[in-house]
Image (cartoon, rainbow, N blue to C red; front, side, top):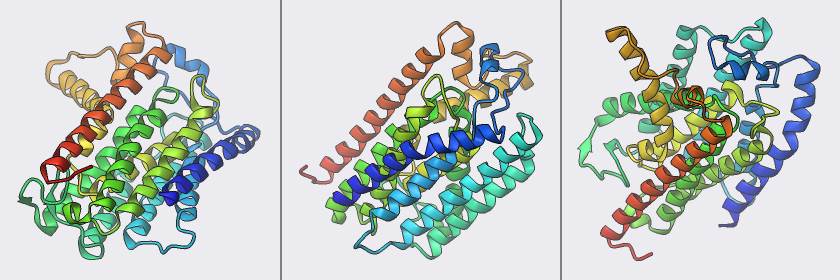
Length: 342
């Protein structure tokens, strides 16, 4: 338990100390956010706000996770997860750098970005089934909770889709000040609780490194909460793709390692809704030449309906919290059904 507290506190402390320094350097170098011209007009005032704050988030996560292991050994699962998260954040960093260097709202071209994400996701998925010995059954609240065995090839394909999907989902959600960071705190809180329960009840869950995964999730909680101090509206710094791709990948790999891959779609329900709104908007326009939303992702739709930005953010945070509560309720109900006692 002390390891988890250390990971969270160190992650938060660093992510509250680093942004002011990072903001100063980014401002001096003129590294600021480029705003889409077709976005909500009120967002044009945010142009020039320092971006790439995800450097502080991911750096804080890595240090917080490392501090939690003073006096204890790292696990192969934890190392693989951290390496995958850092690699995904690296893709986001390249995307952010191109945006600010060329002073445009578009970074890496779609093929290069998607290709890099696929490589990172595939590397994790293959190592998971060969090196980490992850269970290949499709799972909801625990290993083999559905009875469906995807096999190694099927699980690799599924894992790649989950990692790429969630990394892009958080990226889409990161459109309002503090929305992605605040919502992510709820998601990582769920993975912390799940990891701790799996540690306490190994015969039920048979996860070889649950406490290590919980420490990583707790480091994310601290880092996202600390970053939110500066990212809350009106934001002094944005996380950029560096942060959103790293966070989304973190959610995905933790879900896969904790054998709650299907439950992740409830834990990250807000991110799923944001992604679905974009998919439906594009599909509707291409098929019927009509838009079902004023603008996608859906948070922009509510802005254009007249909701103040802070209202959208807080209501979406509430929605994220509710999704987390439903997910944890489902996990605990299954725990009791399996003979758990608390």
